[in-house]
Image 1 (tube, helix red, strand yellow):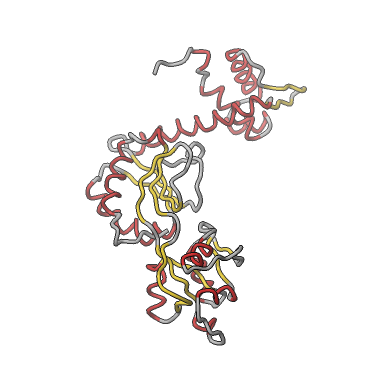
Image 2 (cartoon, rainbow, N blue to C red):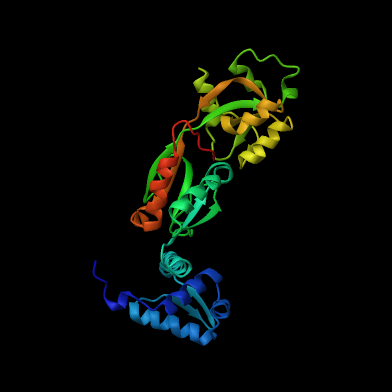
Length: 303
């Protein structure tokens, strides 16, 4: 694709000045961050206006603010500048094989991915994998990631994905929670405090539906990670739906018991998700191909 005319390709310095003014709210703060004088920032912005032929700045004495249109433009430029910085960092850190910035779900990283990464490193020593945790979907345009491990639906805008694995959950609680209660059927759990995981808002409704019960809104306390909801269940605060692999050890030791029934397939699945524009990235392709060999049906992937 040919480049656009020069007037639509402003200098990075001018764009950084605009972005900093938008984010920081004052020319003084922008100048300090960019290590420039305030007059230099003003000149950069004036040059940008002249080049584009559009008024970007409202000037009131020494005070400068962006027009609404300029603020939208600055937000788009921020994403573009971030992508340039990320690409430059990747080239600098590992110019030969590239790197992959991967957002992972915390239990997935601890229980499944990290123990297997030694195999990937042995097969592809030229690729560097950088891991950070994210619990919710995000915008790849504003976050410094090449791909993400995600649970739910593969419906992020502007992305592609491969499905990895479904999840089976079991309703568990501390033994003491059931001491004075007779649980004869799944419906009886509605009388107990139910614990919810933030990333699975429909988990309990789906669990009751799987047992033939049409439950209304299922209320209860909400936790952001399986590590915290597990602790809540262990301390007798309620019944939690945990992936069967995660509850296995505590069930074996008797610290947790099944409140009712066995493993039930949860809605949604684990996916590897990446932005469309990254699809041909060499490091991502190597990781994607390798991950596909690890996601076996009998091997439940954690979050």
